Image 1 (tube, helix red, strand yellow):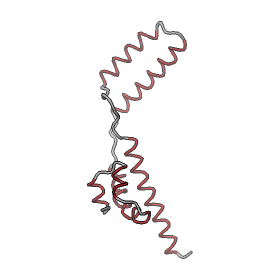
Image 2: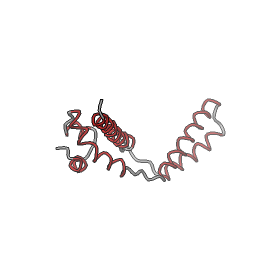
Image 3: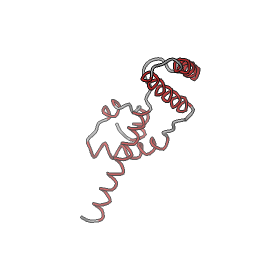
Image 4: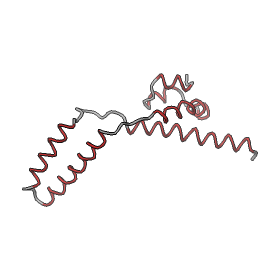
Length: 125
């Protein structure tokens, strides 16, 4: 295997990692169905949990403690800004080569939730 072939293999692996990272980012940050919770509604539920803990059975308390933990994590996550700018830039650079090498069409990327502007910038027609 010559150096050129090794370089192409390395480029293919790097492209695949960039595409995968952006797809995972989109998957992990897509909007959830239903009404969005607010900080006020979460805090209200935490207040109710505090009240319920006083009279709950041991098993119910266990479940309430878990719900309390989940709600605190959700509140913390609300304060974080999720930024996929670098992942998107990596996708734009790599996706055209990746799509061509794997025979992936634009429609498949669209079904994965990639917007038209990003696909245009990536050179996927």
